[in-house]
View 1 (cartoon, helix red, strand yellow):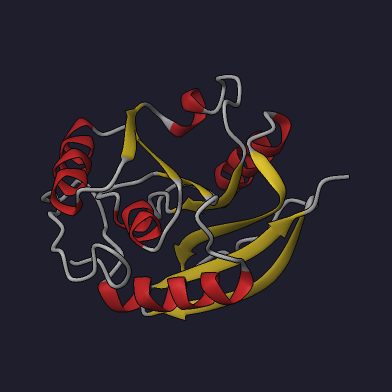
View 2 (cartoon, helix red, strand yellow):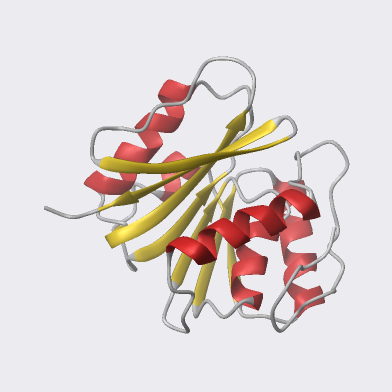
Length: 185
């Protein structure tokens, strides 16, 4: 795995054995191509990477110019790999050892314009939808925020909670990435 573009382009990333399911470089390149066609990747962008795994999505966002990136991961092995990857790319990214659900119960200290959710495929869609609703009730999102959710391309279809406007879905092998925006009332 490597960083695809930006200030850390080409830097390699570590991956833990068995603890995560890293998104391939090719899929990440496609995901960021879609993201950059949907939002302005400016220096003021705050990014939240939930179920961070290796931190590749958040680190890619930082390399492309995001001003603040938080990685949230509950597995200690994966957090150690995130820390190693942060060191490898030399970008100011924060990693938090906590479950996503627990971390989101904190008072929102930032509003995020881009959120990635790449939960384990075994996590039920209903649980993912609950986490998305928690993002809204805890006021973690900026108006117009883009949210990207990776789910398995086979199996039960993923649906967005009513407060989100689905934009598109892209398939990358066994993965399907769903894109939606949230507009505040």
